Structures are given as C-alpha cells and as structure tokens.
Length: 383
Image (cartoon, rainbow, N blue to C red):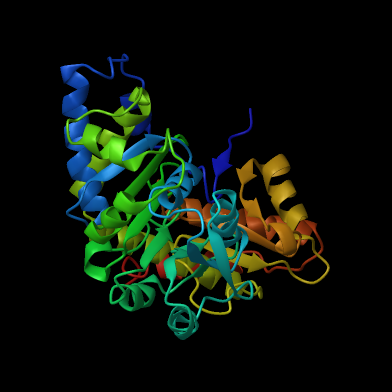
C-alpha cells in the first residue's frame, strides 16, 4: 500500500479532528440543533474574514461564489474590470460576459502582479466602471495582487466596488476585509480552510449590499439577499451541506483557538522554507514579484517538462502537487503549503523533489533543498 500525500493547491489535507466532526450522525438542516451550529459558524466566519458583516455560506464550489458576486451586484450592460494575470483572472471575464456584463480587461504578464496605477487610470478614463474583479493571488502563477492598494482606490469611488477572489488565500495570509475596504470577498472550503470541496463563502460590505439592491442580473440559487435573510435566522435558503458544516464549525473553532496571527505566521514560515529550498536546488521561482505565501510556483529546469515532475511524484512516490495551466503547462510546477500542512510535510516534498529531478536528468544535490528548508523551519531549535 502506497502512502499518499496531498501538496496541491486544492483540495488540501483535512485533519483527523475535522474528519471525525464530519462523521457524526446527520442532523436535520431545519432543526434547533443545526441552528446552534450555524450561529457558531456565523461568528467564526466573521473572525476569519475580519468583518462585522454577515458571511454567506453556500453549498457550491468557490466558482459559485464568484458567479454570485457578479450576478448579485451588477446588471446586464454594466462594465467591470477583469484583471487577467492567470487562469483564474480569466474566469472573472468569462463570468461577466455570461451575464451580459461588459468587460474591460487588464492583461498582466503571467508571473507579475497588476499595477494599481493602471487600474486607477482605467477607472479615471471610464467613470462608469461598476466593479474591479481581481484575485488576492493568482493560484495558477503563485503571484499576489495588491488588493490593499486597489481597495484604497475603489473605496473613494461610490459607484465602483472591489470584488476579490480569495478562494485559495483566505486563512493563509492577512486579508482584513473591513480594515482594507474590500467590498466583496469570496472563498472556498478546500484550500487554506482545511475542508473538503463543497462550500463557498461570500462577504459583502455595506457599499456592496447597496449594489445588490440595484442589481438586475438573473439569479435563483445564488441569491445573496435570500441567503442573508436566512442566515440571520441561523438557517440556509436551501438544504445545507450538513456534514461539511459540522467540519466547518470545528475548523473555525481551531482557527480562533490558534489565532489568525499564529496561522499566518506558520504559512509565512513554510513559504519561506519552500522558496529557500527551491533556490538552493538552483531552480527559479516563476513569480517575478510578489510571490504568494500560500504556494510556490517553480520553473521547470531546462530539459525537464514540468508535467513529468508532477506525474513522477504522483505515480511513483504518491505525492500530489500541481502542474502549470494553459500557457504555463509543462513550464512550471506548483507546491502548496496552505491549510493542514506542517513543517515536515515541506521537508518531505522537497526531499522527494530532489529525487525526481535527478531521475529526470537534472542534477540536484541531494540534501541541498532539504537543508535549506530545515534552516528556515527550525532556526530557533538550532540556536
């Protein structure tokens, strides 16, 4: 029997405690017992999103929350900026166009982040733009976008909201929604939130809720107003994903106990260790700036196909990482260090990477990456 390891940027590992919470007997989604669960979840999500407003929970993938963020705040004929610096940035434009929202694309070279001044210039040139749609980080490239700076721009424009895809970012590094002034933040359960796929989340500012009142896009299942009325009564508009919600309750209690500051610090440490290991092996990071702390995107060395790295790790050694997408396919591979992943998971995947690179013809020094990672991870222990 081959032991398998999940080091891809979603789904990510789920802790035994969370698995056990989800294995408890099903209770009815309209029962008083479940209402108590929802009440606890509501407070935990506000802590995680760092907002005073309600956070909506919907049985869906994160893309459902992305769709809902468009259909609930905009109308056919409106114009939105879609920042396209990778595969998921392109999705914003595709969703907008599906519902008749005009798209002004800002195309960013893969491996780079958008420049706030370019967004500001677009907004100044076209004051009718109703939304700026962006990723907190582009998972396909491993690059953070400057959402704090973008929020500083849009918060002074009463007719424009900032919509942030934080699906693989929320819980990995600071994204204080209210403090920064983001208007819509969406997330998914299967990334840094340490749950299986199946739950989507959306938090809206007071300004964004004003946009909801004016929205004319068709909507039924992803009706945020309907969800808001129900969550305020500790229930959902439709049948809740009860087992996932039990797991969510457990995860949110863990996050509150550990504190966001501690969790962010651990993600930062694992990111620094992984990136130090990559450089020690003579490899190059794919991001040219603002590399995210949730995962590490690595350029495949000359003569090596990135997909072969992924395949060999998966099929021979049981380790699942991710390859490149679209134009980056075969050129990069990606290692996640978000959610329920620890220090020795990082050491393990770097050790396996050294082996695989040598098998594929790239002469990586055995132990060089592991040593570099250990020096970062266990610096305090070695003093």
